Amino acid sequence: MQPALGGCAAQHFDGPLVAVIGIALLIFGLIEAELRAALGPGVPLPGILPEGRAAIPTARAARAAFDGLHLTYTPAGPVLDRLSRVQRTILALLNIRLPWPEKPA
Image 1 (cartoon, one colour):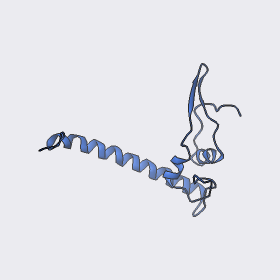
Image 2: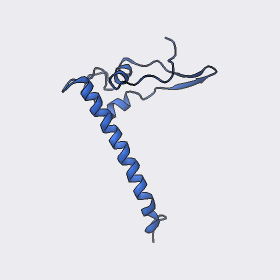
Image 3: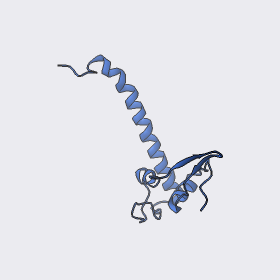
Image 4: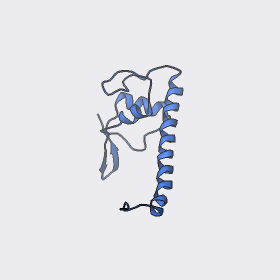
C-alpha cells in the first residue's frame, strides 16, 4: 500500500519544504550570530531565559523571549503590548525599530 503522497508526487513537495526549512534555519543562525556579536564574545544577555536568568543568547531563547507579545488593532492602527526589558534589549542589539507604537504604561 502506497502513502497518499508516495512516489513521484511526494518529490514535488520535498524540495520546496527543505528549502523553506533551510531558510528558516539560516535566519535563526543569523539572529543568533548578530546578537552574540553585538554583545561581545562570551557575554551573556541578562534576562533572556524564561526564569529571568542571563545566558549567552541562542536564536531559540530570543524567539521565546517574545512569546505572549500581542498586537491589538485599534481605530488608530495596530498597537503592540508593552515590551519587556529583554525584548527591548534584543531589538536594540539587532538594530530593529518598532513598526507600531506600544500600549501606554
